[in-house]
Length: 255
Image 1 (cartoon, rainbow, N blue to C red):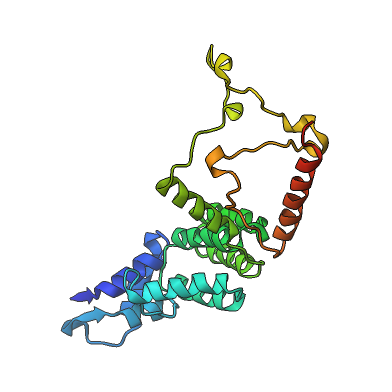
Image 2: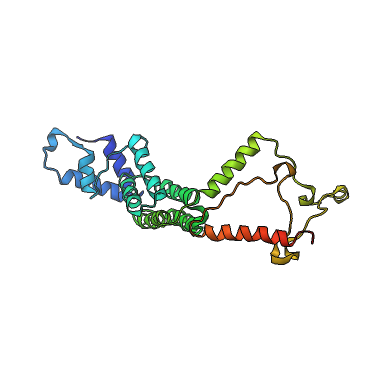
């Protein structure tokens, strides 16, 4: 009479990578490696099965408090530029059977929210890693996840894009933001050009530096700043370029 605890069964399911043979071998080894009188019955616990699967057990429920504590620490370690801590909390999550696709998504979000334009390639690495994780699966997915997490943690940081879209969303949802200027509208239907659609538009490539002196926000929103670049990493180059754009607009004014 052999029974198995629910947490032991869940551990097997989380760590057999969908291979029924691995699960059966683990159960068989758990029975054969334990000295007990089988006539008295035998219960397979989490400790027994984790030892048989040669896995160190990290005791936290994937849907419980420790799950959220560990994931929070993982994200904050990447944001805080600590690759060692990021890999540590990643390892804890993997040993506990965390969904590898969930972990990949968290890295992608962090790459955009916390690294952003300070290192634009971090998002490329993170999204490529998310795709690779789906293709490869465990156990090799651990390497891919570590690669991406270390890239994000080791990158210069900027939340300027995150702040910009939040501010713009707030304006759109709470203010009268005006209409799209007529010169930015495309006269796709007959008669629209006659009422001013597209009139006054300046094609950027016709001007020095490929920059036209043109306002793109609605009249009521002119002068609003959403994107405030930092001076970290690649974003310093972005900041310098945007200053140059303003200089070129001045030079091309009235042309």
